[in-house]
Image (tube, each protein chain N blue to C red):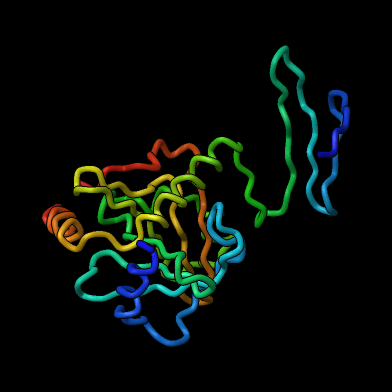
Length: 142
Length: 80
């Protein structure tokens, strides 16, 4: 029930563009059956965005650009991970971390250990695990 | 589950592209070498499981209370 209420809210969010479907070939970790997502945003939600599954209204992830939490985050993603998505010198790499918002700001966290990488040129995405980064799956947001 | 016995240096192949080799056998651990195409992700199971659980809790949290979000946003923007 909670998920459905949340979905009603998400329908009010504006799509970036009609064809902005990001394809996750392997799905997200633990969610391999959901492969196509759109990134939704609005002023009320910013700087957060909602990565919404097109296959299920119940599946959506609140995301945040990791640079809001860690300055040099992009440098810590291995080059081969970007290459596997087809991100080259001319493509702007884009990463998001999945956020879990708790009962209050202090208990809200971002998963810096397993970011979502997105190539906006070919609209491919992938969730990777930064195994040796030392980052937590529950990095405090504040 | 398929169960196979292998000796040191022996290999398995999964599909046409994934090779697993037993590199060393210790008393209570084994060292494995894995050869796979770049697009195949390989992780220790417990790490994969932890990320999976975190993804699941992220889905159930969905869009939270606007007031909480605003409070977090303000703090984030305040940082350099």
